[in-house]
Image (cartoon, rainbow, N blue to C red):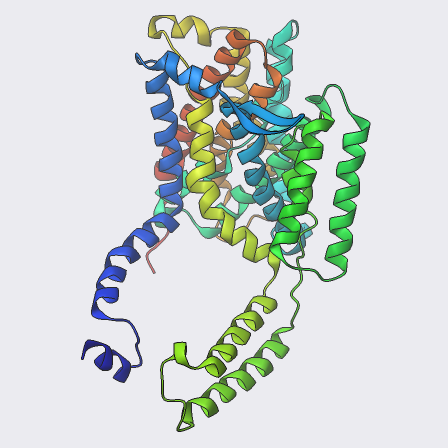
Length: 459
């Protein structure tokens, strides 16, 4: 009876299914909230620090250095758990970042000169000034290898702080910060590729480039199957892993080959969809087609064709970016934090640690350099009449956005891992500086946007 009543209302779900959906739907909405992803990332960071400073700290470190992998005869691919996370899973993060960059360049804020000039200037100032401040404090010694650490911005954390502001954060503010973080990440990727690559294996690098060329040709031929690009991307990752260039660069490069055009035009979608709906209605009215969809192969075929038609009207770039956003935000980045943010600290020694030139360079770069670089560069461009801020954003917002740009975290730690590999003491100092500076910049940015910027009028 429950099922028949649902069908009369045009529904096919049972009361049990409806009850389950009522439980699951709020959870799905919660997971979709950017604030949840940021809070999960923060919780993973705190948990890593707690574990590293607990009696289980040694077991935690041994687990991260445990070798795992594949062995096939004389061939093997084995790396530590930390290495798999940093070089393997983070390739997915860089792949999604590459999709965001490509979308932004094609149809986003960076496409229009009037909108792109201020944000490009902001990003340039936000990379140059922090690097210069770091150089000023670390002119000699091995610490100089960390010069790129304060250049980066953590997109997930920064956007998450904006989400905490709710209606006090206009959409234009999010757009500006997102574009700024993307350009920062592009700069960080270029720095990693050029300055943090040592010995190059030309054979592996040539193989990677040949595979990327093949994927680009496949794109031009109109192939849009995910398996082709993910399989090809996996091969590119393996080749990059052996080339000496950091393997995560494969994610960015493969993303550039992903199709950004639909197979069907909107007009064709409307025409084809109407045909399929009319066909479905015709089948439904036939006397011998009163059964459920499971027993009607003709109706099922129409529904499948309609689904394929809808999928062909959007772009693989949009589909795959959407499919990866939650796994990356809710699993990859928190796991990266859990693996890399665990630093053993002696609270009494913390002031001495933070007073070291390396930590001071990172602190001043992220907390002060970003503020000065982003704010002054943007104001200079606006004063010259070379562009305008996004709708809803004013000059009063700039210091707050600039401070949020000082949340380096993920990319900063990533660069620190590359710069100070084999130097555990310097890596500890760098991570301490990154965590302290990110916390300070995020808190100050939130307070500025919460209290120093007038709230928008209701309605």
